[in-house]
Length: 276
Image 1: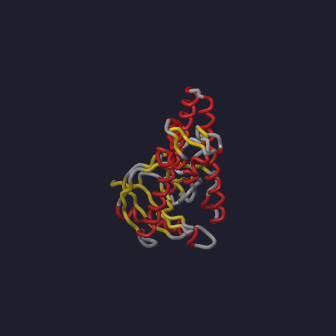
Image 2: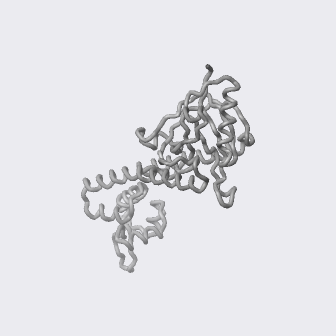
Image 3: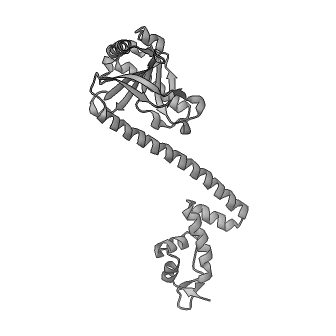
């Protein structure tokens, strides 16, 4: 029989003495023997049990749960606990992937903001396919000011919550104007959107924005949009293109710190076009 001091047991198993004392204190793993001198010693064979404890801990299982399962000595219950931990870990990974994509999207937003053309610039731009989450607020935000627009954004946020979607998508919200209203310079729209990722949002809640050529104009002020829509329409007609889809007012930067009392919006007003 090989009796080991706490220091020897710790070194042999690459674990700290403090951790072994904690395991002993909570009744999870204690020295096997007490010597004539009153000192307590571990048996080398206890390393097998310590391996199991350390393995289960590395899987993210709590010490309380490990102790409970080991005391019951029921393999089916241990398997069930591991399956539950597997499910929880998969959910955490999914959530972390979603957060990572949100970070990438936000960094991209800052990059677009820094490299965007000056206010009022008109250009043709190819934009890839996108997915959006759309809410019809029932209120024509063109009839109101920025304060009322904030109320419409609360409606969008409420719907995100109701549909159990990650709140990280409540960022850089935009608006949609139908093709018919755009061509008629009729400023009436009740639809708001945010871009989302298909892998994190159910397909039934998404709308696909097809890839294609978009006529764009950049805008640095909420109150300039109507004027710039007219300029965009004139530009499209001047170059002889045909509007083939709905107009989008996309916020490429929504940075409140740039203005003390409102959103620091920088907008890309865009509409899909094609050759006649």
